[in-house]
Image (cartoon, rainbow, N blue to C red; front, side):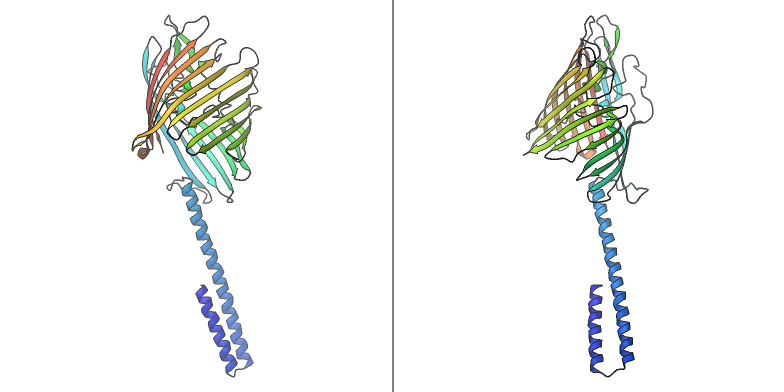
Length: 414
């Protein structure tokens, strides 16, 4: 188009030169000038339309590139051409062997450390700094490790339907931070679970996840009413709930968060993440008020360090300030190592220790230790894992036997 306009300019110049050199009537000159002006206007219009078309093509290419970077699936079409849609999730199935000191059983389970789930995320970018999104995430657990036990052995445990995890919208601005509205993570969710070991599928600070439904048995052979999850906790903030949450932009590795939760509860959290010449550090600290008649507040946190060579250390702790009676608390430690033993992917090993006090009954002392191994298979989008754990619960006036559990399974992501 620019070449055409240049040629027209040359033609106009030549025509005017010819008119000035040859005799012509005023009417002929006016007519020719009018034709030249009309042609010039038309070329200007065509040039403008071409520029607009080129800009639209560039915008479309930029959106496609952004969608590709965000991981949007090429096979998913949105009902709104301004919104990109991503569908993802995973299936996590395992075999759980548990021995309560008197009997042992094998269960086909869904690992509650990372339940089988499906998510759909839609996002739009009104500006270069702003992203508006919506998230729907549900889980479907058949025989959750939090539910199977000696009583329901042989029975499929599960609600046989999807249960909500996230149903929310969010507004993310690079300059002003992120606002979340709806069912989702509270500000303190995950603050006891910072873990860079790579073995969290097989064991992390929520040690009860592996065999949470298994009941303790007394030395007389009678099953108690206390299961593993009752006695072992990691006091991980306020979990997921209907809330209004705000996160500040990250500054020097720090991000602050706060949320107002349904039922007049609230929480705050401070997170930190950094990479120092290959050494990674991640940490979180939270304070929450559950608006409860039994607990005034909760303080909890965790920190994890991964050295460049693969050695890693994770620590976590938390405590409830009870209205009456002793204050339940826990602390947790893990030492691990990561390496690549094959071309398949990262291999990670770890050993950990967990202590819980006064969690279920005043005077209770729970102790757990375990071993974990996880093998990533990058080409399959899969992580295979195995873990062993011992649970010991000391209770005043009752002699309870230890529980040993082994879990082996795989999580396949899509």
